[in-house]
Image (cartoon, rainbow, N blue to C red; front, side, top):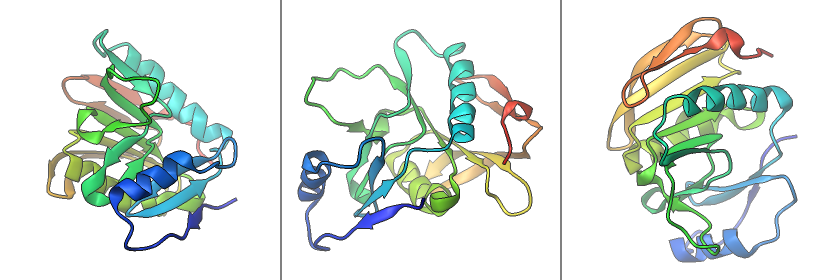
Amino acid sequence: MSALTVSQDPDQSWDDLVRFWEEMEWPEGSKVEIIEGVVTVSPAPASRHNVIAERIQRRLYSVIPDDWGVYQTLAIAVPSRLGMLIPDLVVAPVPECTEADTHIPAALAELVVEVTSRSNARHDRVSKPAAYATAGIPLYLLVDRWASGVPTVTLYGEPKGDVYQVLSAVKFGDTITLPAPFDLTLDTSQFPAD
């Protein structure tokens, strides 16, 4: 199943987009994001996708401070890019929030992780990193199961404007190291390939 975009008035304000995103009844189990001002509804990810995210999450918990969390369904807002994004993993200090809060500012994130799905890999490769860089998120880890050739894992950092620098890129089976504050080496041979 592929992603669905929901048409709305192109002149809608950020607040109107967020209100639409918050108040609409979306299909249960779907992932609903605002990407470059367009509401996008994606099906729940496949099992292999979730296994990869879980393996990374498990390793991250061994190195993060007690007052940080690793979140799987936390929406992060990037209003300047008209983005309400839900990365596969977000590492951020535990947010002070109320029951009514639906998202946090993306600038609070220390690391975001995306695991590509066949139907919407372009968002993870192009649109989302531009938003994450714009928000100043220090590190972006892209696990690209659908890269042409072989599956790859790329670590991006040093955001400037809407662009990241490639810090490291490996194919599945190799190791990749996240720098401080994580100082963590991930063994990508533990990631199931498709």
